[in-house]
Amino acid sequence: MRSLPPGILRPPGALATLGILALLAGCATTGEQDPISRQQRLRFQQTVHTAEQLLATGDFPRAAVRLREAQSDFYYAEHSPSAPERARTLAVKAQKDAESAVLEMSPRPGRGLALRAPSHHHK
Image 1 (cartoon, one colour):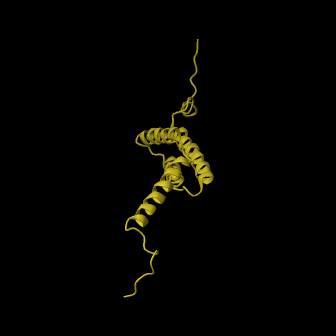
Image 2 (tube, rainbow, N blue to C red):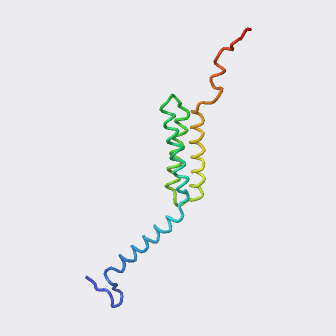
Image 3 (cartoon, rainbow, N blue to C red):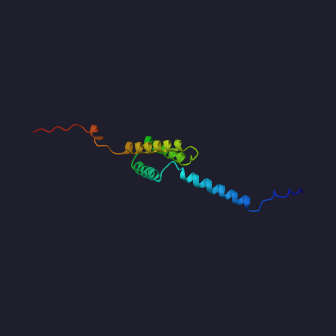
């Protein structure tokens, strides 16, 4: 076994300490660069919750697909720290898609009126 020249050896914990410091610094900078705000996350979660409640009331296949795609986009946005601008754009798109799904399933005034026969009132 060869021995290392004097001065090359480091204290046993120096490399481990350096690794931990680098890891902590990386975590600290990642947290500051979170492209999706807490408020945006909560709003999306509330929209998804509303959509899921509406899905339970009827058959809305297009809205269900739109909601699944929105959830997938938002998940991807949350897990894309290396592309913060793309993540923000994707999160906004996901929110709009989830809201569209809710609107598609929401009862609209006058929606059923076209199906009714006109009533004739005679005096």
